[in-house]
Image 1: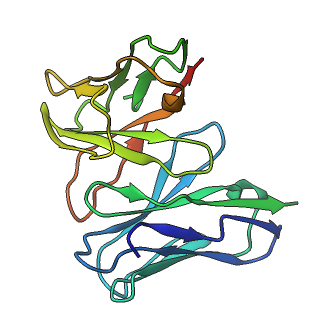
Image 2: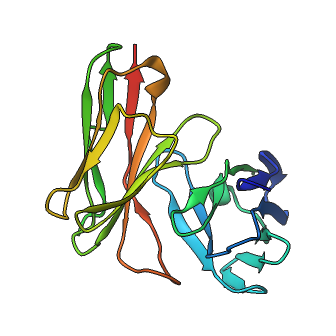
Length: 108
Length: 115
């Protein structure tokens, strides 16, 4: 993997469903992995920064894991709510190279 | 502190014109980043300052783009001889901490439309 990739590109879930997305990145020369949430008409906001293989971070219903050896991170949302609707971006490295994002829509 | 501010919010220009955007970071932040974002893509790194020093510039960035941060506070991004492909959202972000806890604070962006 040469760039930061994210899947799926978009996702529609029902309120109350749990969901997860994937961020894949080059595993060589790992520095840090960041997750951001970008709501429509707002600015991107930081969720997590992870630096060590095996890191797990949690904020409320949202959590993330990191595997630097294989080059991926998962973001999990438990019990999705309409206010979770946003684009979720991951970024790698010192200069924050961003992936294309996963657009989540939570239907009431 | 009111966060990162960008001006203008929207800019419409004709092809071939020069445009300049301004970013005012959070006052105590010494790092400042510029990104460009187009529909369906994540923010694309353009350049990065630590205080007044421009430490890195994307290899993908045309010579028509230039950025300054003269006193280590606000920054400007200029695009000369704009092209329709320059139409995008230009985002500025600032931060104060280095590894491992660096976190970017973004402005609302400047939406550029080149006609």
